[in-house]
Structure formats: structure tokens, C-alpha cells
Image (tube, rainbow, N blue to C red; front, side, top):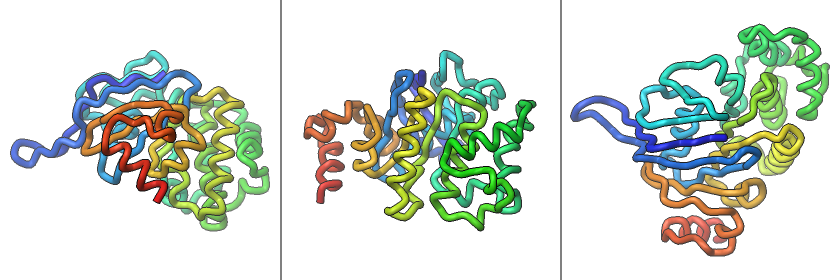
Length: 245
């Protein structure tokens, strides 16, 4: 479903050039929940942004659902892959109602029956039609993230890119959002690529995980191997030990 081949990315030119991704290779199967873990600055979110089309000056090859990602925004591919950002308040327009926020992707892609689709999607994420007239500041963090998930799903994509979707939330709300994501993945047969620094989230939700450090992918392993101390790389073993401390 997702294929990343020899992905490299740099910012700046000449002596100011700073390479942030080094020959990253990975693949994600259809219906899989795939985790990307590593310390801050390891390149996890950068990989997601390349796949989402937010960075377009990368080198290598990216493909989603059998369609190559070009070095530009591809409207058709945007319907196949959507992203849920870390900060649910920063990713929602503060002056738009929840109804307007959810209708906007439908307008962009000329999709009809907008009101019905918005109501159905709100219900799917555990809200209801009454939330259409509210603004983001009137919602809790967990409710805002539910809206962000609803916006990502309203185009009926096959792939969700999740950038630490619970790290900005209270601990008491994190489990609710993780359970919602798990239920939606099973109901819709979605494929997830999730960036997180929390190995507890990985163990709870993911099937396989790739470990990154300094822009390089160190190893890919299934979650059972990860939690069972089967990692090969010292850095991965250190992450596991740190999570248990």
C-alpha cells in the first residue's frame, strides 16, 4: 500500500545544505498499522510530510496504493491519503465552524451530499450533528482531534498518516482516541502509518515498526519482536529500555 524507496531529502544549498533523510526504504502492507519511532529530529515526521505531499523536493521514489507520488500536489492521490496532525487546535481553522471545516474537502473535490456526509462522519467519530455549529475553541482537545480525524476520513481515503495523534492530549483522553483509531481502521480496512515516540502506543496499536535515528532507518521489526527484546540494533534496545524505566 505504501512504498518508500531510497528517499533522501535536504534543505538549503551548497555549504548551507543540510541533509535530513538518508536513503530511507520501507513498505507498508494494505490494512497494516505501521509505526515510525525514534527521538525528536530523527526524520519520522519528515517521511510523513513527503508522503503527504507537504515536501516535494525529495529524491527517490514514493508510491501509495500503486500510484507514484510526484513532485507536486496530486488531487487524485489526495483522496487516497490524508494526514492527521499532532496539534488538533493548530490544524483546525479557528474562525470556521466544525461543519465548514468538514465540508471544505468535499467542496474542493466537488463531492455532493455534503450535509449528510458531514453528519455521518461526525457520528462515526463519536460526535453528532449538534457539533456542526461550534468552533474549535469550544471543544476539548480530544473532541478537536475527533474532528481532525473526521476531516481526514471524509474523502474516504485508503491511507491515514498519523503524526503523534495523541501526544498533545491529556493522558485520560489518549486511550479514547487510540481506541477510536483502532475501531475505524478495522471498520474501514484502512492502512495507517503512525509517527510516535511512545512505545506504549506502538505496542497497543501497531503491527510493525521502523526505528529511525539521525534521518536513517535502522531496522524494521514486528511489534512482538520489539516488546520481546528481539531488536538487533543497540539504539532500538535503548528505546525499549527507556520506555520501561
